[in-house]
Length: 410
Image 1 (cartoon, rainbow, N blue to C red):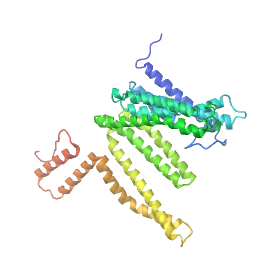
Image 2: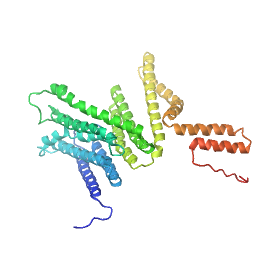
Image 3: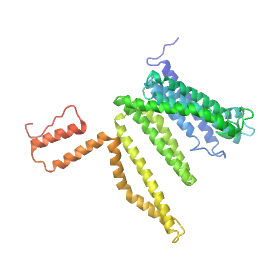
Image 4: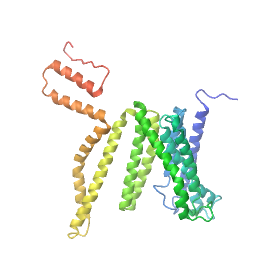
């Protein structure tokens, strides 16, 4: 039996194989997307190929983490999520090609379409339950949290079964009817009874996982807290983007704007595995407070300016309805007002958010500003040296401070 090369372990080989399978399945699925790009198929949420892109991202992040931190299950979770989405994408493109491209269809179209009804649940459950439950160490917070893991497994299995038996058209392939259903049960009855019951353990498991993550953050030392902040930042961006998308969809924006927001939501979701991978590998953790502060700031600024634009625009349209039949004047005036208020709103929001989420930097900048103000009137050199020493210690808290003055004996 041939000996393995130094540093090559079974886990290394497994990570590379899973990654290669994920890339291969995603490549074949994307090849089908390109081959059928001119064929009229049902419109996809976001864009065709989004699942393949997410699969490649999760699979690549998972493989890197698994190779660098083979004892941490987080990498293997991402490998499993990426592989699952790759398989799902391949099945989806196969079914689309069978129904809309190939005359007479392809074998196993209905059976594979049935897989689409529930195959998305396990990777979603891993991402929403076990990822926050184990992040960032790969271990449960304590043995008492094993019950949360058990609830998570039950939730994933029960919800998968519930989705697999939904009567009527398959949600992910509405041009096919579900071949596996409970005889005599209507869709309304099924959604009221079975679906409602199955979603309870899923919601409970997600709530327990998020509670575990919050408690881990509170109990952890500085470095794990920064790792969790990276993950929370990505979740925050995804949440803000999805909220803006829902608002725009409800307001009734143009299809092009809605489609653009769908693409932004996809991009924000791709940020989740990327941020988690950076946190696990401890890459530039020291920047996270500043990044969180700016993310929250610009999220608040965007929400405030959008709300202001909508309110002023509606008010001006009502006021000017007797003068002009077009909305161009109201839109122009609202845009100018928002542009004029951007800088003062940005300044005040930055200051308020930094005070709460980036306190160390805020205090350091305030200390430095106060020193610069005192420096204008300071003429005594020894007093200036003592003041500078105290300012540096307050601002950056070094272990020691040495000051060299050119041309003096100090």
